[in-house]
Image 1 (cartoon, rainbow, N blue to C red):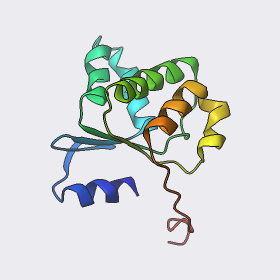
Image 2 (image 1 turned 90 degrees about the horizontal axis):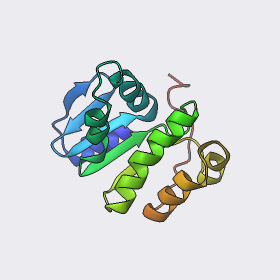
Image 3 (image 1 turned 180 degrees about the horizontal axis):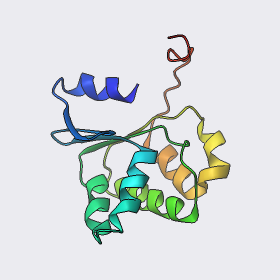
Image 4 (image 1 turned 45 degrees about the vertical axis):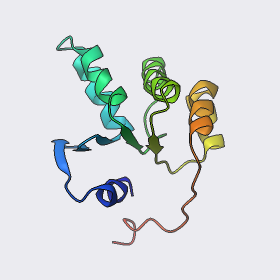
Length: 133
């Protein structure tokens, strides 16, 4: 779903990372991949530089929110990204198989309230096409 959103924004997708697409000022990445990239950036001592890659784009699309394991580090890191984008009114699209109330216990009120305060929820119902393939 998220890949279709970004393909409709611009037909020219440029691979940036196996699980990331960057189109000019847009970035699409799964939350799990984003957290893995950020976690691995500690090894090369460039965490803040990599973190800015999620703050800087005009539009960020975070795919599969809620699939990640919510450790304290993951919670703080996601909050840093989401809060920055919220404070600077940067458009962010979140995709998830869970509703905001379902995300609340795992992700906490700080993250969920900023998502709710900056987004319009669009519920898409249907069968998982991957299960029928």
